[in-house]
Image (cartoon, one colour):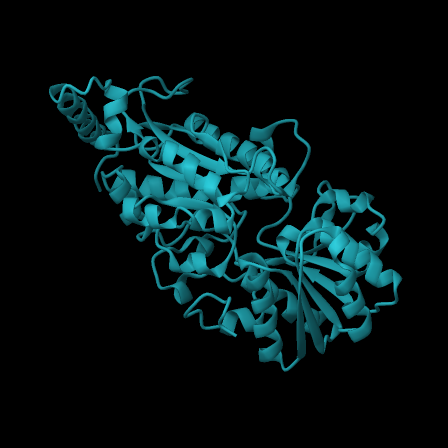
Length: 432
């Protein structure tokens, strides 16, 4: 095993060489500006406001929805949690003689693929990897460049297609496996025999619907589906269809506003079945909506990890690092999905290669990740085929106003028979 401390001179030599070449070329670059030519995002100089002044600095980029996009309510707390996560890493000694900076290169994508690509272009030569890339269509807008640059990115989205991208470092079960686990739970818990999937157009909705469809097929259930548009005012057809067909379970892959509208009005109009939702269908404020009672009685959420108040070492560390904040399960997401990149950087440092190529190669060598109990260690296997490495377990929660984030976890991590038996040879969207 190579000493991670002993490899800092190697990185320093690369950086110094880059600066020298730039000076000889008469470009007028400073050492910091020249550094990305050799090792993008890695400097021998300490980070701004460094915890460890004798360390170099690894810069990571964050591109999220922060101001006016539809998911700013998710993006802002996720970034807050990630800053706290990496600050804790620095207080614990950093990685391989380097502190980690996730403060300098934070950019807003407004949940617009064109904006996402523009701000990515602004920072791509200044960061080693992306600690967050929020959204599926937005991340797809930079995917070709990520591949070409061998730049690893952590997605804040959960389509099964990420299992097939070797520069994407995902955490938790995909929307597809969430839906499979939801339908299997509905069969076991309340003997569901029929399913209606109501979903957004696009990868998020289609992924959730595909998982429900595959589970219904595997379990011999009657299945139907309805694509719906975004906006609470657009749900009249969904409500009418649910009431007319009376499926035993409605699988929702929409947003929180649509969830409240559909559940509240369908129950009021005489629907007698249950609702299961993918993880983006919930926010705590739904308990203050007119649909609150219907949600508490008929709706369950399938999520990639347990709630903010869970008693695990990782949850405890997160709460201590964040201090006095409004509890939010999106904070939990931002903290939890940061662990794999930490593991990959540690592996690259141990290999003596904190370059993009070194990080890319280290990713494929990671077989477990210590999530400090927030996910099982086996959830961090990035070494095998998509089918072998894909994590398939979810938890089921239900609304409860007594809980910090408005939901109570009612199952442990589990994968139903459909998710367990599914052969993931291609992304779920289009597989059924």
